[in-house]
Image (cartoon, rainbow, N blue to C red):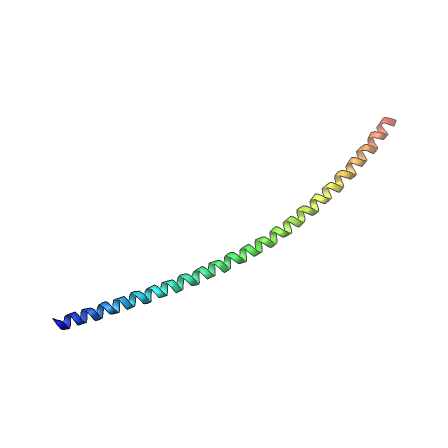
Length: 87
């Protein structure tokens, strides 16, 4: 009966060891996966940030161009109004 108990204790010890190794492996795998996901996220964030900066610069240029065009059109409208009054 003692031999059976010793064998059972040995098997339980191996099972506990296997559980611990499995837990360590899963933790290592999850840590690695999290790191890869974070790298991917950071890469996409950086790309989007660059595109956002470029878009903002284009919008500012368009806004300035629109302001210049509006001023030129306003000036031309005033000139045409003056010509119309003279007619």
